[in-house]
Length: 287
Image 1 (cartoon, rainbow, N blue to C red):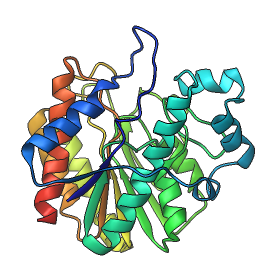
Image 2 (image 1 turned 90 degrees about the vertical axis):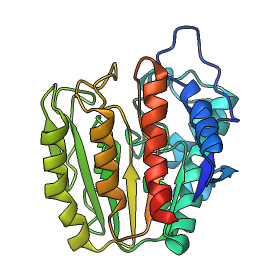
Image 3 (image 1 turned 120 degrees about the horizontal axis):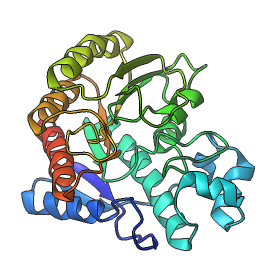
Image 4 (image 1 turned 180 degrees about the vertical axis):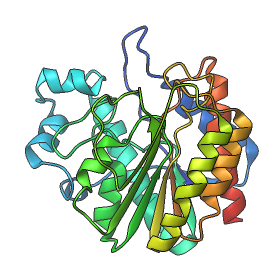
């Protein structure tokens, strides 16, 4: 299975910043040790592709460092040249994986899933919406987004709200960020403390909708912040429940792209192990 990474682009963050940047390198090293992956550095996303989704003034202001400070605060990362390089690589990883998946059946990126990015603004550590860019760049006639990050994919939902050719599904915490939810085609909300059985039962209810939709490509936004150990998640899934979740999604009979999404467990090894399990499940499908 081919997987693109971009942790070689470093983002300088202030001491104590809550974003777990180290997980990307640790995950790549875990998959290298596991074997069976063709790990490639992600190419930068093309501006022309990004502008198929994002407002040009917003996109260019971010790239040249002139974005309004209030918008930078909403994103949550201080602007830097490293952030620009990393953001472009994150978009490029998903576009490249999508192109490969169409022909090879499955591919992924150890980044991406930046689902809080709107057409003209970033939010929640998300700047450009890589999944939306990939869908538009490939000119897909039918695409499905199965977003299992614990935070609703509000940016993705808003971008495709009026696009019948894109099925957006989000399973997320009711009482978690973003506090103003947007309308996906299918939204499933969970109360704090929801565990494996309820979560998996609701997932089993919606996955047949993907099959009925018959997409050319499925994007699996595979955040692992629904784990009980996650400090931002508020749900209570076990590693075993996450593994069952992954098996259900990778069993979908369509070409599949896996994007990373969120994960904020302490210790960080819980996040890395859960992310690695997702990619290992996808690799078994691709074998």
